[in-house]
Image 1 (cartoon, helix red, strand yellow):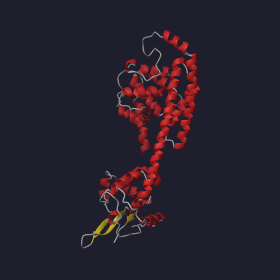
Image 2 (cartoon, helix red, strand yellow):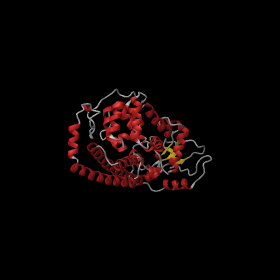
Image 3 (cartoon, helix red, strand yellow):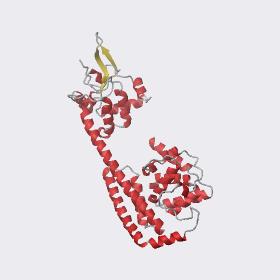
Image 4 (cartoon, helix red, strand yellow):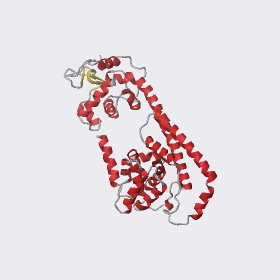
Length: 387
């Protein structure tokens, strides 16, 4: 007969939540026994709805690893009774105090139930035939009973996450198109309306934040409006700017790439000056300033990729082509790209990115600038947040 213990051991009181979970544990089990690992994956997708964290689920994963078999069937094996030491081993060495905190969170969420023995220890006894008689530990039956609901909520969460990704992609693409067309207008006429540059920079900063679906849809709509404004500007330039553009090309005879008109497309290797790579690993730069990855459709595998993505992001920050070319010339391509990646990461705190980059360029020209402190400051800030 399956042993049922309703009250907790020691000083832990009986609560309404505990009684609700107790009632849930006694509810009829679903007809189909779920795969315990598939159920855990569903719960991972639906964790926000159930009020548990990824660390709570890491402990739950360790806990259900003590359940024999692949499926959660409605029998006495649903009560698992590992010691704290054994559970800590399977939770990758998690401290026992931390383990207890996450176990309590799982109990509070109604996903598991304590079945405490008279002395609070976890163990099982067997009858004279060797069959399991009584078990004291953690009961996984609430998880079994909730499995149909978990599956439904997980599917809803995945659909919402997909819709959120699609909204973000839409916003990024529209903003990218607008930014590239602003660059084209700037390179063709020598200037672009400040309002468009500021709008693009503002949307780029907003896109860095974690936004919900409503906020992302609003941002995508604003990006669409900006794109329409830029497209009207481009049409005007196509009609009125051909003579000016051709005249500029005839007057440009300087063979040095940094003194010629910069191109609005991503730079080719043959068109740029490559100084020595920064004394910082690329992986460390991307760890300190991960936001720039959002603009690399094919990833950032080497310094050349970082330079290309930085050139693409540059107008979104409101940095002129002239300021960027001078930075590349003084710092070298890779160092300039690292600097811009760090500026992108701190865009909300930099009032005038163009002036800030020019100040750093001047320091670089005097041999007084290295991007290392910027990278390390971002890493320290991230570590402080983690603590």
